[in-house]
Image (cartoon, one colour):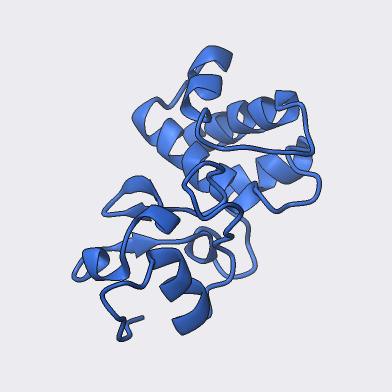
Length: 143
């Protein structure tokens, strides 16, 4: 998908308002919460801290592209099955960050996951089920 953006348009705003990819959530507009994490050329970024024009010519992956049709990605299934979400607002950013963690380390420890998720805030959970979900998702992705 492509579209036109003014130079001052944030990537999160462009995704949500121009491309109608509303799975990328904006929780703070200050790059503190991580709800807006997307992958830019395979690297997780907080899309509220990136201008849309900076993504020109880049590959942008959002939560909408993680599932395969109606089939959830193993990491999404793991979040669902391990109760790694409550209200769901932070979940897209958590899943996108978790995918990056597992890409870099297919068998992460609890400490690795907690460190990797430091830039993602959840106001509903105590993070334990999120960590369990990432471990389960990583295991499912390894096969």
